Amino acid sequence: MSGSAGGSAAGAARGADRGAPSAAAEATAGAVLAGYLHAQAAEFLRSLRLHRESGADAEDASEAARMLRRSARRIAGTLHVYRPLTDVTWTDPLRSELLWLSETLGREYAHAARLARLRGALHRLSGAEG
Image (cartoon, rainbow, N blue to C red; front, side):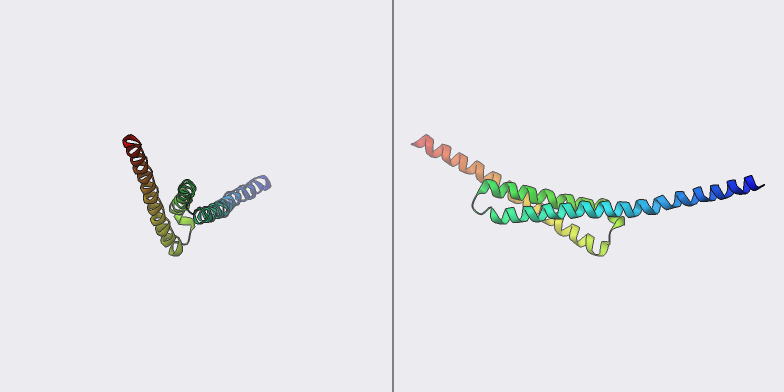
């Protein structure tokens, strides 16, 4: 009988062990999520600084805007996917703002590309006449 009692205790211990990894996995998922969001926030801030410092250089400004948009989209997407792990009272409004910023930067990129094409066309026209 002691063998069966020992087996029951071992089975109960295994059952308790099965419950423990899920709690640890949630904590680990939260820690991994926090680390990833921290890295993306740092990338976002670096991109924002580059965008501000790009000044009149159109190529640098375009690259900085692209990097900023990428960071905003990654953070917003991560907040959406991992919504159950976050405090939605602040992550949902943040996500909305990041999506708005991403759309705005997308339009900036499209306008910059149009401007470059127009300038190229004007240059070709002025060269053809001269």
